[in-house]
Amino acid sequence: MISKFRLLLTFLCSCTAFITTYGAVSDTIISFVNFYPGPDIYELEGHSVLRIQLPDNDIAISYGTYDFEQPNFVYRFVKGETDYWVTAVPWQYMADNYCRQGRRIVSHRLDLTAGQKQCLINLLTENLRPDNRTYRYNYVKDNCATRPLRIVELALGDSIKFQPTEAPEPGTQTFRSVMRHYHHNYPWYQFGIDLALGSGIDYPLTEREKSFAPVILDRQLYGATIGGKKLVDSISIINDVHPENAILDPTPWYASPLFISLIVMMIAILMTVRDIRRHKVARWVDAVLFGFFGLAGCVITFLIFISVHEATSPNILLLWLNPLCFIPTVFIWINRCKLIIFSYQIVNFVALMVLLTLSAAGVQSLNYAFYPLILADMVRSISYIHLNIKLIKCHE
Image 1 (cartoon, rainbow, N blue to C red):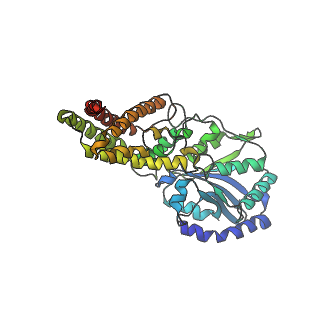
Image 2: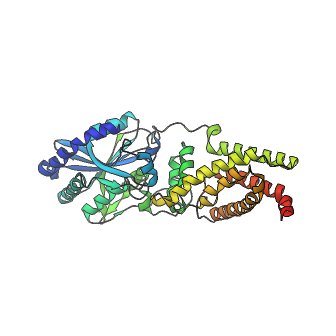
Image 3: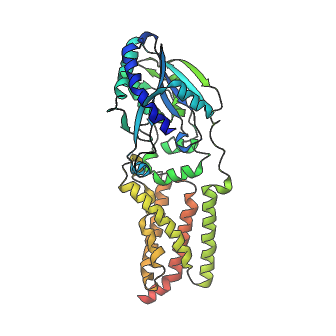
């Protein structure tokens, strides 16, 4: 699909020239089109485009084009160097592609004057120029839905106002809660998001901020106003299927992060009971468990201190998952280093208590699957302290 988009970039210049030179503005129809969720993880909140229907042409302006084939794409994406493009593609090509995926498509025809249409077309034409079409994508603040909204506002010289909509789930709405609602069939994806993204996505959202998700934006546009009048004059459903028709079936409960975490917790508890009965720490258990925590901690540390992603810092999970978790993994095999591990486990237990306190206070919402893992961590810390406290006192 990406390679096809690459080929279609050659279509961009002819589109912009056609719009500028031959577009009969009075007969042009401009619509905000929202595509509902697709099967891939980057499609779970949907996609939005501006559709420009000219007398002899029909194109879609998309702010969501990227290329996996760019050098070091994964590293650059994780680091926050998420460069996306605005592209013009034939509308029918785009619509057919989403229809084949079985995705709901809703079109909102914008109520614009001829002058407003021309201004918007001029802005889009300028955006499509090779030296302007790349922008730094932000998952929640500057994406395929928020960019078109802003350019419409810029053309109309006013701010779009949204009426309050029914929340996707009860309670205070945040970026994270919206994601969880639309990722409910993809718990491992949400597990990763909850690891990587910190407290910056946990504050109550304004109606405008909720529009980062095209699926929510689709509902918001029904009552949207600008300059005291309705923004949309008509709505049509291009592909009338269920909103979740294209997403994959739910992950089985026995393969979910919560179930796996519960298994890890039970193993940790059982091994701890065994250790206490034997009066001896099972070193391999701590080596493996804290080794995994250390690896996750390296990723979180990178995201906090190296990545320029806005939402990755601050992240209170650093109290739990950090490179210091490798201390038990390495030093547990060295008998003379018991004092080092003993000291680490005391600090670790206190840090975990602080983490749970901050989470309970609403600083950052934790994934449900984190709690069994945190409990497993705490149990192993307590057991190590309990089994070695006498030895440490004797050493002193």
